[in-house]
Length: 387
Ligand code: LLP
Image 1 (cartoon, rainbow, N blue to C red):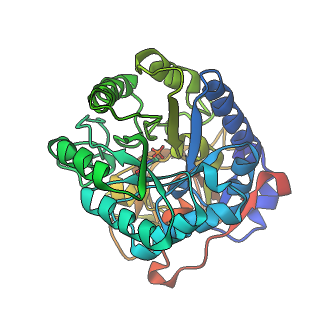
Image 2: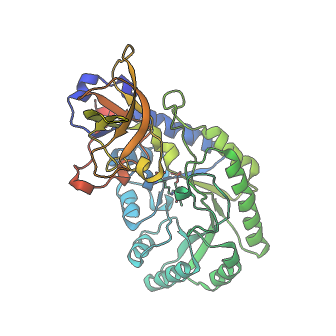
Image 3: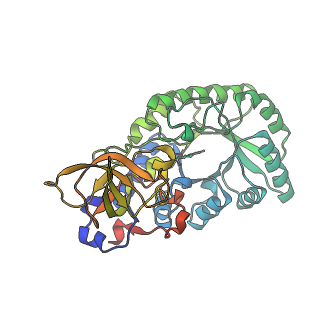
């Protein structure tokens, strides 16, 4: 059920701010992604970092997705939620020994290894435990994702992956590691990518590096091309999910792979973003010298993306306001920071204290990035299938 279809009186009776999840839309999005991937035999690992809410993970797990983790706690959470270890990957530039040991003992599908030093540590720890670690080597492909610079990861200047200049050395080190088994190669160039040409450029790089390894006699079983597929933040209702068919088609068309090579994806945002809405209440309205302010009870503590990346989340007033006067508001939160602003000069129907405001497309990197700054309340939820 779309946020606009939820009974307004019911919503008004609840304490805000709260995250509302449209579980039907989530289920439909997951099914669309799965169907599109299955067509080519592609595997999807859900990137837990986008949202690790239990209800959401339950649904994703039940649909047969794997899990892409970036901490020991995420690995543990995936296991607790029923994701099989054989479908769990573990990425991140700074895996601690404790996290590596946990993942080794649980025998996860693969570590996505980000540096030669990390490779040596995994080899050493695996040797101590007496297991063999399956790994994919993360290569920094130097592909520009043309997205916000904070969420671009595949450029030479970024900290992620093994740089091209180090690969010769990495291949030699790999041959000397007795407790490590190279499954494949891993890439991830950034997030919120809507231009399919970026993925096409990525495929070209993946092909190059795959050939490079194969020419040196190394078998590459898995090509993990990461995540990054973006969503439409501007039209949440007319365009409620990404075009998964177009996305996977690019990889089918441009990735060179032999029949026994698997292609893996790590999608986060594309699967969960659009099913989430942050529902907030107008606390105060204020007309400054130059501005009309709408002061909400939600702030950057509940949804950090606008303050951190100048990200846009569509702001809507809930309830019928078809004949209301339109006003330009600066929509702000209660936190003591000027960056605590969801939008400037946003045209909205006239609003007053007590009205509900929706911040759409907040299902990814929303509640997981929330903080208790200002000693704010814990996050509250409402799930459409529990109304
Ligand atoms: N794989 C790796 C290695 C990643 O670093 C990421 C995201 C993903 C997969 C999933 O990417 P997605 O499909 O969600 O784009 N907090 C930022 C986004 C940070 C993304 C970090 N890495 C935001 O709110 O826009």
